Image (cartoon, rainbow, N blue to C red; front, side, top):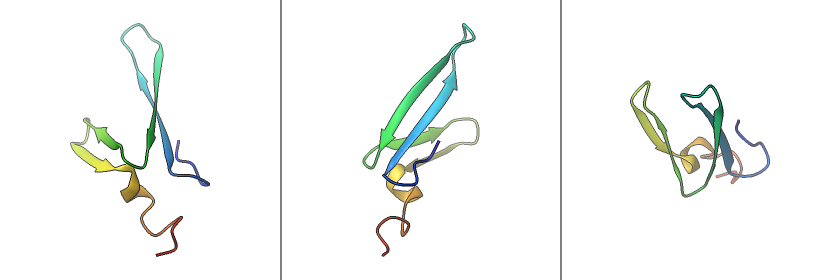
Length: 53
């Protein structure tokens, strides 16, 4: 989930036991999407969105 009001992303990843693991990421963190081979900073998601730059 990507927040609309602050620089924050919550990632839900499945665990082997059938449970889900929640990870909260902020502006300085990196998001890794291993299934598609992508890694980028959370700040990149919000580039020009909340700052108006």
